[in-house]
Each structure stands twice: as C-alpha cells, then as structure tokens.
Length: 493
Image: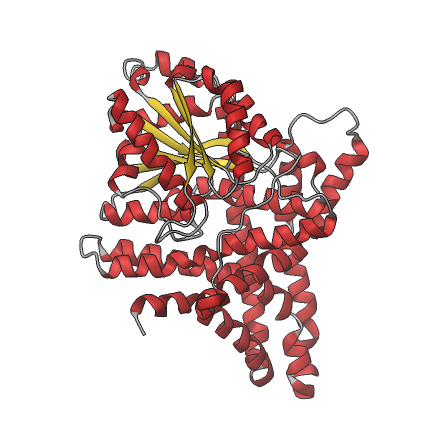
C-alpha cells in the first residue's frame, strides 16, 4: 500500500479509533474516562474563551474596515497612490445550474463596487453539460458586459480526460482562457489579482479597494492569498433556523481564523496573484476541495513560501436553504460532508512534504499536525462531549456507579459546559449585529426567535458537524465507489 493511500486512511483511522476507545475505556477504565472528560470539558471551556476573544477582535477589525473608503485610501496613501492604477482584477465566477436571479444579484453588487470598473476583467465560467447555464451567461453578458473593461463567458467542455466534473476543472479552464485574453492585451500577470468567487458571492462595495491595498502593502504580495470573511446572508431572512445557525457558525469560525493568520488557509471565495495561478498550472482538476487545495499547491510549489493574508472584510453568500424544510436538512448535511471531504488534502500535503526537502521540518510538522488535528476534532469532539458525560456511568458497572465520582460526573460536566455555553450566547448576540437591513415585516418577535434558535447549536455540532465529517473521512478511507464527487449546492430564489 502506498504512502499516499495510507495517509488517505489515516483521518478515518484516528477518528474511529477515538470513538471505539471511548466505549471500551468507559467499560474497562470508567474512573480514568470520568477524569478525562472533566479535563476535556475544562479544556473546551478555556478554548471557547480563547476563540471568543479572537472572534471579538476580528469582528472589531471587520467593523472598522467597513467604515473606510478604501478607494480614497488607495489614492492618498503614499504606499499605494502611485501604484494602484496599474492593478487589474480578474474575477472568475464558476457556475453550473444556478438561476438567472441568483447570478443577476451577484452582478448587480459587482457593478456597484467602489472601484473603477474599467479595471475589472470578468469571466463567467459555464459548463457544456448544463446548457441552461450558458443561456443565463448570454443574458448576463447583454445586461452587464459593457460595464467592465472585459467580459467573457467560457464553456468548459464535458468529459475531458483526467478531470472530475466540478468547480476546480471549470476554474482551470476559465483561468487558461483568461490567460489568453491577458496575453492578447499584453497585461503583465504580476499586475493582475484573480478572485475566484462562488456564483452567489456578493461583494461589499469596498472589497476590491481593501484587496488592492493589502496586495500593494503586504510584505510578500506575489506569495500570498487574500481571504475575506464569508457571510451567509444573501437569503438569511428566508432560511430556516438550522441553515442560519450553520451559516453563522461557519462565519464565526472564519472570523476567528482571521486573527490567527498562521493557521489560515483559503476557503471558498478568495483572491490571489494571477502569476501564481499560472506558475502552478491553475486549479487541480480531479478533486472536490479545490478552494483549499489551491493553497497547498502554492505552498508546495514555492517551498513553503506562501501564506494567507486576512482581509478582515466580508463577502456575502447564500445560506444553504431549499424550498422545503426536509430538503434543506439534506442539503445542509451534503454541504457539510463536502466540506469534510477536505480531509483529502491530508494525503496530498503529507506526500508533498515527503518529496520536498526545501521546506523546513518545523513547518511540515506544524501544518500536518494542525490539519490532521483539525479534521479529527471536527469528527470527534462533539461526540466526546456528548457521550462521555454518561457512558462511564452506563458501561462502568455497579462498582463504579456507587462511587462519589460517578455521582458527581453529570453535575460537574453539566456545570462546565453551561459556563462554556457563554460562547453560544455571545455568538447569538454577534449574529444579530451581522444581520443585513431587515425587511418591513421583520419585528421584535422575529429577533427573539432568531436569538433563541441558537439553542439548536449542540444539535448542529453533532448532526451537521461530526457525523458528515466522519462519513467523509470513512468514504475517503474506503475509496473506490465510496469516494465523493463534486456536489453543487442548489441555489434558488
């Protein structure tokens, strides 16, 4: 068995070993498990406090950045005023079967950007296998194409050898077509920032201003990706409670990561130098998690000289909501499972580190441990917290159940986790501050239920957190027919 294959199996092996030991040790060593869960819950409490501080710090910076006119700052700052006008923005928008209404909203926001539109090269990337997408693209081109310096829509051919149908292969095709256009225009790749956005991504008006400012002032502009904060707000007032909670949870996680740039990788909609995209041969065409893989492609290609610059600035996308409640639940689970499939990067990273002697061992260990621990925690932590408060009592036998430790275990863990739930309360309050302008019929009663819906958080951590992550890791380990293909999250209005 190859090293690469072993590393694909590793995430599921670690997660399932942890869960099996959770039951076995509760039966054979109930006292040890009881002490462990008290310590683990205490660790979770301090981690919640630690992450809450990062969340507060990131939110403060985000609010401050939203108040700044970044175009004016570009024009007046000595570091940028003589440089910013030579920068072009290549915007790639891959799409599949999304309706015209969703795509139009994206272009309406793009058109309202506080940035010269004659610096925008927009590529609407459609799929040959979805003719309805091409019809939407033609309609969008007629309505919005004239606003930008250049506009083109591409048609990614179906069934190309070595490709998986999905975003990565579509983006790679669009990137090559954009490269041909830039060559014809004689624009230097080093002066182009490429932003790859999900088709429902609506940019806030100063996104390209703050992106350009960071590109021109950061220490390593051509060796950096640029990551905004994803807000799942486009349809927030029509999304069910679970969809809102999961969307906000993802937002808060990425907000916290912005204050920990040493652990930040790319996610969903983000930006990077076009020169780097050309150097690595564009996005990988045969994987699901292309948005995070592009970071590792660059990291390995440049021998560890790659990082993500946090923008502390938002872009807005759709919360995962379907026309019916049950369909929403199914789609939420599938989306989380697709994100959990990002564990496929572990084998890619480990194999790349193994074959690259130029990256220092310290960096290799840091990143590999961080990524493996992250996916392991995702699949197991919620189940550990939920189960170990009562498993030793049930499985530990009568001899353990009559001990003082067994009697107090539920009370101790409940108390610790009650204190830790302050993170849920703070998240609920923060989510209210992030809500977009409210519709006319939105009153105090709605705000109350939006706040109360955060009580569903423990449920979402298990059903839409641990379980889809565990399934994704298990499928990766089994491989073959169990592997996941790219799943397009349905969008509708």
